[in-house]
Image (cartoon, rainbow, N blue to C red; front, side, top):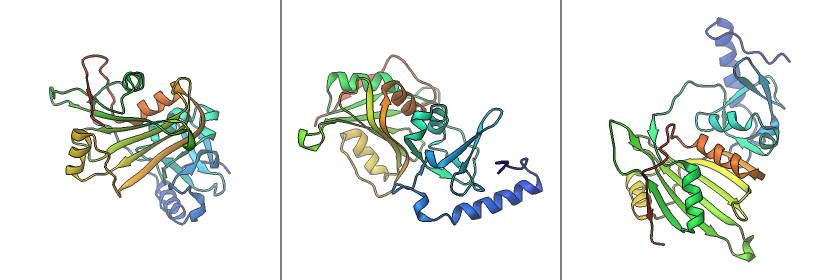
Length: 252
């Protein structure tokens, strides 16, 4: 198997895209996890000059790509065999062209360290003012410790909302102490009704939504540095502000 995609825009490329999309659509249900993800160990990564292509190991004529939400996470973990083997990502039949709206927001590493250190059950990090047509992301954290009878791990949940973006980005992580490693990390996109977004980010109420789509998942011993880098890559803030943010401690 050559694992080659024809040159973009050629007749051969058009035919490949058509055939590949049809083959991808007909994949059996067992190809995916219960969350609709593909295990990275079931993918063949073929390096290219400046990128790479992905092919299904058990259907190796089918090319796939991480979708627009999980692509930055896939790019980060693809260079680390241990993370790659422990991960699953959401894929599509071909890589699209997309970009993210420039945003400012609280650095995730600084925010999560503060939330865990201060022991907030709920806290909100945000920059309060809009400036020069730049929109600021809001991060809402829930930190909670499970009972000894239920595994005794610390659970971290994060929601990020950016104005003019319809989705709320969600991160869930578990660790015994969030000092060196996390044992579980996943990210999802949740689409809320606008009124529920207000409830979530104004009153810090956890709101459930039926429109929930998981984008990636890792299980195992994941170093904290990698966890923070993965989440920073996943959240749609591309330009970060190191200072001048406010912490709003929410009532439990």
